Image 1 (cartoon, rainbow, N blue to C red):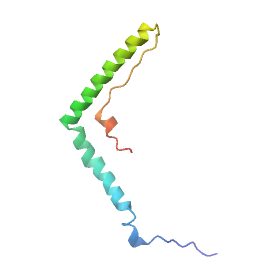
Image 2 (tube, one colour):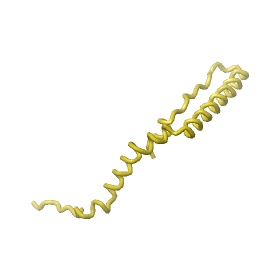
Image 3 (cartoon, rainbow, N blue to C red):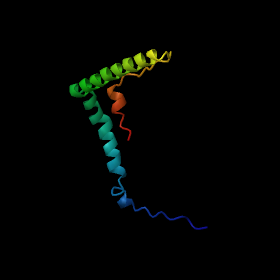
Image 4 (cartoon, helix red, strand yellow):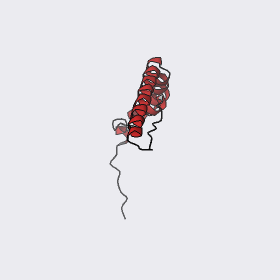
Length: 88
């Protein structure tokens, strides 16, 4: 039996994007996300988002109560970690 031949050229590994993809992930994980999590501007925006969510919850719950429903809406507050998970 003949062995299967690999057509992947070892010199082409850098051109295939394996290294650049890995470096990009490392950069985002260790440098970009922690810097953004500590950003005052980002945290202020997230707190505004959470206030809007609370206002939305109270409005929806008031409407549900006026219809006679006993169900209530509860949305968890957002954090920087939720928004900057790095998943695409």
